[in-house]
Image (cartoon, rainbow, N blue to C red):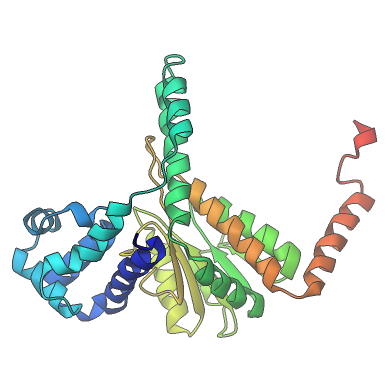
Length: 300
């Protein structure tokens, strides 16, 4: 039996090679490359004609992309994607039965089931990528940084604030941006080469986040990026990048997998830091108890 991890590595090697080289190619080849990055999960099932039509390029452009990546043809390029698909994912019959049962519960059951399925699927898809080594590398960058600034706008600002709150409790040098009344570009101007910028944006990508990441890289700041596609403009600039699934039956992209990834990154930060981190967290909570901020059990 073929090893799932080996096939995943082969597929991810291709995707990382595309991400690293895409800026060097012609506009048409870039379109083809972006299509591959956007459709990595299904590429093994897509013929060259269908892929070319969907990407808005010619079949010869896809062949050219394959050749630039060291393959003789498009079929050779998609081989590792096709092989990975053959293994499939783990079956979850109990989960499937549960989802079907709640869909029949009442008028809202179908939506409830769709939301549950999307949330579980997003987390599975995100963690199926096996990025523990990359998460550790990102955590090491944050622990070693002079300061870490966490950038998110719109709904993502709450995610940035939550991560900064938890990480700062341990390290004491993590801050969410932009602050009230400020702009992302203004905030990035405060960063030095010893700092880290953790940025996130999802389709439709926010211009101010992309511009802030570009400016940070221009200034020599280390960038960790989280987005929903390998073709995301902030992932192209990142020293460490993570792709999260954000599918949702609702009108807004799901943030469940992003939150799960950020919580995992916080755990890695605490695990990688020295013993002082434990003392910092303990002192933080002890002070809150002393100030009566927490409701003690006997007070209720």
